[in-house]
Length: 175
Image (cartoon, rainbow, N blue to C red; front, top):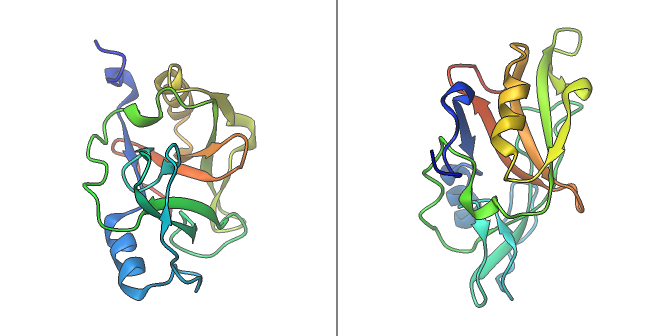
C-alpha cells in the first residue's frame, strides 16, 4: 500500500468546497457573506480549498469567507479560505488523504456528532485530535470507529481555518 492510500478499514471520503458553491460565488462576484471578490496574484503556498493543494507562485486566487455548514447553528463557523479565482479541476481523489496536504503542518481533526437537544451536529470535544498527513488516515479511522461521529472538519492549527471535510463512507454527512 502506498502512503497516499487510505487503509481499507478507514473507508472515508474527503471533500473540498463544493464546485457548484464556488461557481455560484464566482458568478456573483461576491462570497456567500457579501464580500466582493478581489483577485490576488499569489506568492505560492496558500492552501487552496477547491483542489486541496498549495498554490504555486503566480496563480490568481481569491480569499473568501466560507462556512462548511449547510444550515445555521451555533457551530456553523465562518472563516477565511483561499480558492482559485477561476474554475479548476477540483479534488477528485476523495477516497484518500489529500496528497497536497500530506506534508502540511499538523492540523486539528474536529469531529461532529448529532446533538438532539440542539438539533444539529455539534463538536465532539472528547474526540478531537491533532496530527499531520502522515498519521491522518489513522486519526480518521480512530474517530470513525465511534459510530456517533458523523463527519470531521480539518482545520489549520495556526489560523483555525477550515481545510476540508471528511465523511465515513456510508454514513450520512451534516444534517
